[in-house]
Image (cartoon, rainbow, N blue to C red):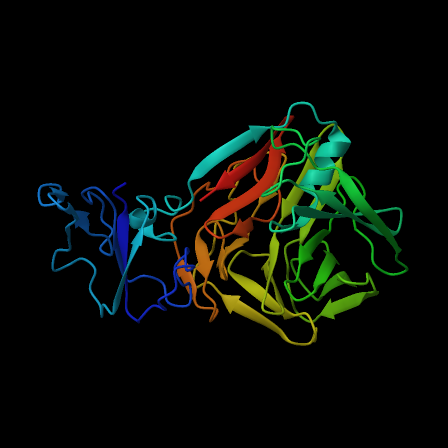
Length: 364
């Protein structure tokens, strides 16, 4: 029950629902439930002698040497042991904050059933709904499926594998399409603005980037589509989705506050693309060259970019809400994940797999 602390340079809002700390201002210092034996100067140590039970409770003492945790301290927040190791990540440790607490092996599903899970775009936890979107035969296929979270029915399976189809909507496209032949390049993302978005492009190392897009309104399924020519933008492919021997998905982009973020081809920065104005394209330089690896290890599913709250996290960097880049050490954080990370309070869920070993996972 002994966790850690986070120290902030600005005041925090007094709100019991603030499970994840603010990402607008990242912690200037932190400490876990042990002694810091690393070179991380932002991390302090727990005093294991002075921290002990009292007659009427407990006392926890954390210490920072003169060279550790320097800065203005305006607020203190409690966190887990993992959170106190490196907060969201540092140059010493980047994976401690993401702790896997559940893994359900998906052993009885067909490849097509797994594809329905791996193509997840949105999870409505309160209403027990999973939305998955796929592109097939010039059409966008939207499935609303039952995903028991807070309500368990008599016919629901008890092994976290229930995902019965509730509704299907097929939208024909005249312009939008996935690209490529052997590997179809494209992906669907939740805009968090009342719309789902589909994108398709192939990586380009020079010139202008050509990106196909579709925008679908959630409440009535109305759709607009088109093609962007992004001047002098050299992009990685947004992602891919494939079903053959295995269900496979790769995720490389995220949407935050009306902008699509997608890594530059040379891994030296990330592009910020306005969803409402494709001429508004900004390259945010990292200040270093990222290793550009998937955060989920080497396998058939991959996730290169995900968000917690509104903090974008890549292999060896973070993008704060004000687009400031924070470099971290690279690390495999979420093994086998092939979907976006779906967050409910302190819990983050996703699906994915590797060469026939397939899972539903939960992290906190």
